Length: 231
Image 1: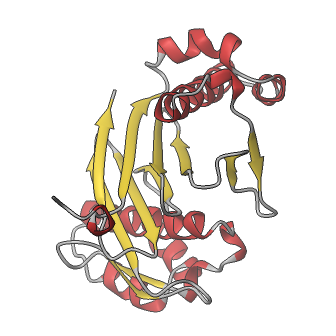
Image 2 (image 1 turned 180 degrees about the vertical axis):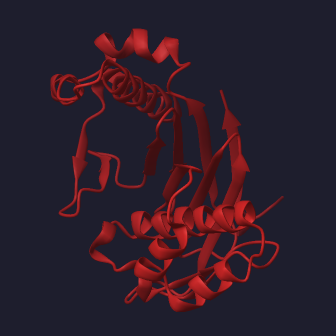
C-alpha cells in the first residue's frame, strides 16, 4: 500500500476562454458578491466588464466544486500585497491570471502556487528585458536568432517570473531582475532565488499555444503532479 506521505503534491490548472464562457457570464449575477459586481461596473468597456464577471464567476464555480462548497458562500481576503486567498480555508492556495480573452487558474491543497498567462504580441521585448530581467535572462533571449522565437522566449520567461512573484505573495515588490529563471532545458528552472525564498522550486511553462504563453510556479517542491484541464 503506497505511503500517502510519499505522494507528490498536486496542482490543478484550468485554462479557458473568457469570451466563449457563456455559462459563467450568465451565472455572474447569481454567483458574484456585491463587491465583485461593483468592480465589474468600474470597467468602461462592455467586453472588459463581461470578461471580469465571467472570470470571477468561473473562479467561484471551480473553487466551490473543488471544495464541495456553495460558490456563492466563498469569501475572499487579500494580504498586504493584494494576493487573494479563501477565508476559512488556510490550506487551499490558488492563483488566477487572465490576459485579454484567456484565463488560467492554478489550485493546490498543500503549497503556495503562482500562475500567469500572457498573449504573445509584438512589443519592444529586448528593451523590456534589459529594463526588468536578470542579465543572464537577457543574454539567453538575445542568443535566440529568429525574431518570433525570441519573442516567444521573452514571454515564456516573463510568465515564469510573474508566476514566481505571485507564488511568493509579494507581487512586484520583488524586483524581477533580482532572480533568474531558465527555459534552456527540458523543464524550466530557477537558477537564482528571490531573497528569502525557499531553495526548492517547481516551474512549468506552456506555450506558445493559441497565441498565449502560460507559466506556473510552486515554491517548496522539487516535483509536482500537474493535472491540466481546458474548457
